[in-house]
Image (cartoon, rainbow, N blue to C red; front, side):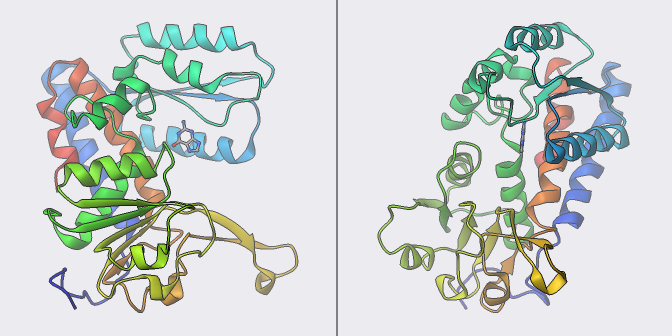
Length: 312
Ligand code: GUN
């Protein structure tokens, strides 16, 4: 094995346990913020239409916000509501001093322009980190001002939970170049002083590129595409994929969720690996809570109160 972290008893990273430590820090920061600044973090989640998966996500976000002691509001709007009404609601939430985080659940109905909606959110309340201002802040390395997208931020914390807090000099390969995962993960790993490669569908000999990685982040959205023999022995594998596939062994018409990595093969080779489900998923919601308390602390002029949330 390389100089990477010692092989732990099990290579499987417990995303739920790591997420729980983030949530504990969020609650602590929330309590400090209330006592020091009289400010309770507030999160507004906006759902348009009746997408069943989005309804579950939104409900879980609201529940977690309440568990964290936040002021939590949900706006549920009809699928055919005019875009202008949604923009007006965002304007109101931008001006509402009790709201520090605004999340508009995606996807939106076809008649609504997602880019326009995201651009309407106050960048300092954009807890998804999707606003072009936050994309620019992250690209410029201004992580103390940016709100960073939740899944990428959670992926870095998971990698550090396995490898320790110093990732500098490590070879990082990200498979997938999406705006919401691949590109921001690359920026974050660069900020951690990794040597970063982004592989994608046009990459020549993707398996060989992946085999260079000390940290391999899979974010392509293709079930079990990354095989065991694409992985360098001892590498840390972060699987961001959530793919629903048929599971005839569970009964006719049943499905199960798998990642972008062929887990059963990869777990034999990797030094550490996130499972799907139970890896990156729980971290995404924890990081949304982290971003909300960070936004509230900055708004109260006490960014220091939330500093600990992103520390190891
Ligand atoms: N839909 C699926 N994932 C997300 C997310 O992280 N943020 C928002 N706003 N919508 C989503």
